[in-house]
Length: 292
Image (cartoon, rainbow, N blue to C red; front, top):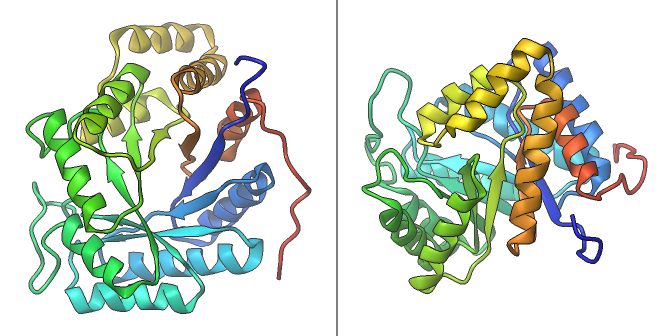
């Protein structure tokens, strides 16, 4: 990084635990990363009643116990409009003022997203309904490489504009491995009049095989050279060093290109994310103490 550039604003994504051991891992991750001063943290959300309750419980606990600004994910999958808005009201009652509004992936076993009976048809519809409540700052998803359901990058840019026009104030991108993909998408968005912040989503590579599978599902491109590098690093026992170098270099290139915010997909494993953030010049602000 250049010495005269201030450190970026950062945020972290966690996912809700589905068991006691997973709960310990989640809150250990929050405890490890909260002292780095994130602008916000987000908690993901799955289809089905159990997943929704887990997300609500995790969001409420993180906000109450750690005093962080928490953005709760909310999707359109397998829920009526009234049920979805009821969940949003529960977040508001818990003091949550930010929502990451998403269409959501197709339920397990389904090929494509299908609107639930009496449910929201799209993320644009969800954003509009949340905006009309006047209770939330709304963030949405964006795709620097084409979403599997999109024709091309231009279609993704226009869809993002529709979500912003409906009431969203910023976007968080899907992860990517090539900073130029983000810059091309940012340029497309600027050409159609998007001025809202577009925050790049960063995936520190905890496991290369898992990261490649994740990329395949969401349409993120896997550079051949990066694949070859991790194959060689695995043979030499240097995967951790390569992961740190790769993620730090990606973030630095984004910052060199004018990015001011970075959102890290932690997978509830804080170690690599913390190392990357520290390499970018961000140190723990204070020793974290639970609020309650």
